Image (cartoon, rainbow, N blue to C red; front, side):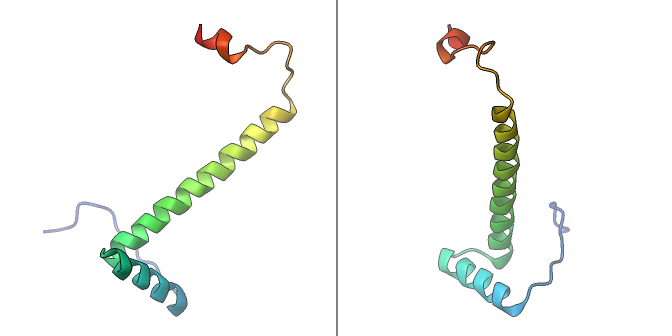
Length: 75
């Protein structure tokens, strides 16, 4: 039966492969599952960095006069 999830092939240097294999074995999961988890975590970190940059740029141009307070928004 073919796999339902899309697949990618990745070439790793030996040190990275050994680290992923070690983490997978330590957690009792497959290397594929551990690699997938690490990729998801890296994507979340990338997203956080992009959003933090976006928020920082917005903060630089923020004019406090026309903004609403937290209480005003939720009342």
